[in-house]
Image (cartoon, rainbow, N blue to C red; front, top):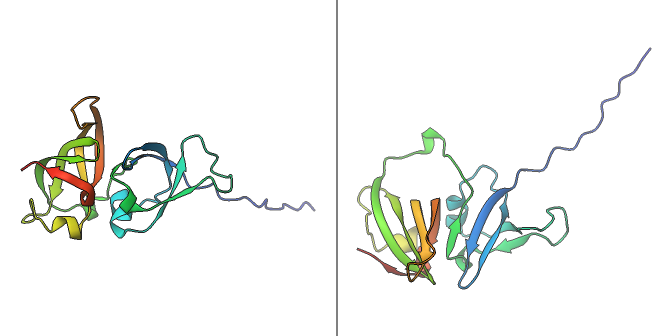
Amino acid sequence: MRRLFARKHEAPPPPLEPIQIYTDNEMFNGWVMPGGERLTDILQKGDEFAFLPDGADRDQPGAWVQVLPDDTRIVVPPPHVSPPERRQTRERQSVTLTIGGHRVTGIAHLRPGIERDVYLRSTQPFLPLTEATLTAADGSDPRGFDVVIVNLRWAEFIDE
């Protein structure tokens, strides 16, 4: 009689997804594990999230860095497609703002009635912009992204 023994397999680690984080004066490339959640939602909660700097070993103790959302100015998140049932009708509005040493131009998808709402900063401090262009404040070095998330608490100027 032959016995078959099941081998114990460990589940593969969750996939890492690319991210860029801009602070006051630095930009960091690296990786996050959002677990299927939109990074905008993670940032809006205000809780720390784990970030693995580019080139670091994910399995090395101490390689992961905890990021406080309020310390971020601009985030280029991993690609994410929301399920159709989570999508809401939104007003598309072109927005340009300056934050730190950068200018961001893109499309804000705002709920009807809150366009240019001054209270948006306190209720939703992180604003995702699609079809975004990120440049230096002087307009040089333009780079296009599908989505850029800006921390409105640090926005110095919003074009009207």
